[in-house]
Image (cartoon, rainbow, N blue to C red; front, side, top):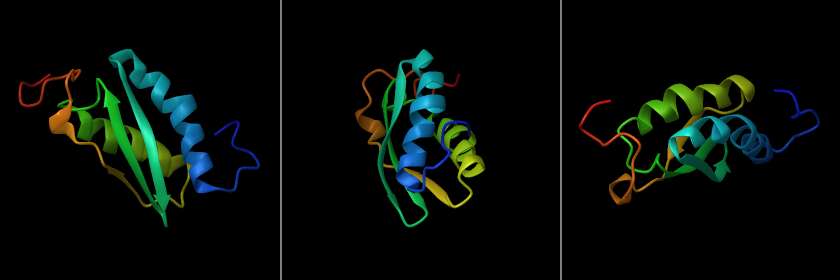
Amino acid sequence: MEGMEGMTDLGEKVQYILDTAVNPAIAAHGGYIELIEVKDKTVYVRMGGGCAGCGAADITLKAGVEAMLKEEIPEIEEVLDTTDHAAGTNPYYSPGKGF
């Protein structure tokens, strides 16, 4: 990804992608994704705003965020969500009610 030249730290690379590609895209739904940590080759994130409790959070995480991170940073093996989705107060899509 353009702009990551010279970055060697996995956390720095992940944060850059979240800041420049992921969060601007999901901001349209009132959501954001926060980097918690990168441990070994696993990325831990927390979803907030309209993503917390959203019925599409798993799809967003696996098909969107994880796929993008793995494509741009081949060392990444997995992205795990640490969000307490039951505590979400304003999900973009209500869980269990479909899209």
